[in-house]
Image (cartoon, protein in one colour):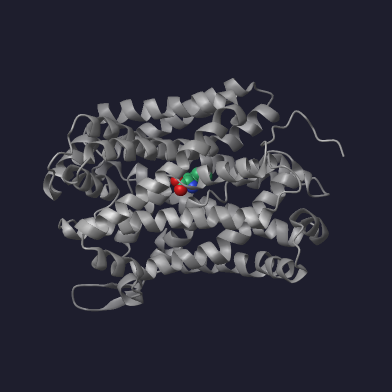
Length: 463
Ligand code: PHE
């Protein structure tokens, strides 16, 4: 069999997995998971998120990897090349993914910029002896300043563009191999600290006690309660977001995966690693939130307000703080690279642009869009700058995470379950147990699509 040399390939399955873990583990785990869990009331939300990961995330990730590796092409072409009719409709799914990645990148870069700013703050000793109030003030002084936000947003976007322009292989492999394990160790230490210094039991119960009414009932002042499906939609959207699914990132990485490596096995490892990091972040943060009188539902600043208090109080905290935010930047970096990769692979593979030019165009456009996200915390935070009842930042996040990614996942499942030949999937997955394959095929054909559609139908009123 001849392999097209022009298409990049990872040097081994391990590198594929590390890169995919690099893509999956990022701000989604450490920044977004704790703050939306706090916003939607804890345990029951976490449970729904875990169910979405298991029932939708795992099968869809396998589908994405197999599609990418089968076609050995970027998502737009992958969808097109695997249908006999050469229908353009499926290419549109790939394009939607490119668009979703671009929207996410624009606000992702702003939040990654916060982490960059916090590296400098930690270095300068700004966390020393912080209490809840002063930590909140430190964060507000950052988000209140358009200049600082734009500066760090620009810096992070440049970092991303610099790696993507050089090509995935040379840029990414070494970086990720080295730093992901380190982040893991540091998070474990933080959980340990939260056990000693925080209200650990309370944080633990908050994350894992299942209280459906608290999450799914919306009560007005006169005591009348109604069901709300919004937490359902957000939990499902986050399952896609955190696993980098529904927009082609894992698909492109899969297209660089060596043949013969197990797709199911890799998927399980990636998903477990990603979920562990999120839960550990939650276990590190909520005990500190409660111990310091912070509000779990206080929004996007949660991590940036709670952890510095810990760094300011623990022995060696200055070093730990610098390291933590630095590693968070690296985790975000390896994710933002994968946010760009589908678009760049497509523009440079089929759009006829050079890789560098494709990267500059996409990065530049995402940078522009991100300005709106940065201003959402200051100049554009008021009533006059609401878009569909949300700030620009919230609108981007909502549209991409809760609409575009699940839609992309839905079409991927439908494509693999109904359009692609069952035989090709079976060959590509090459699972030893044919019953396990049968189970996966059933889930990708019926369960995952039905689950996504049901959540969408329930959540219509949210939009
Ligand atoms: N999974 C990444 C995170 O959790 C974000 C991401 C989403 C990356 C979609 C690529 C594609 O931070």
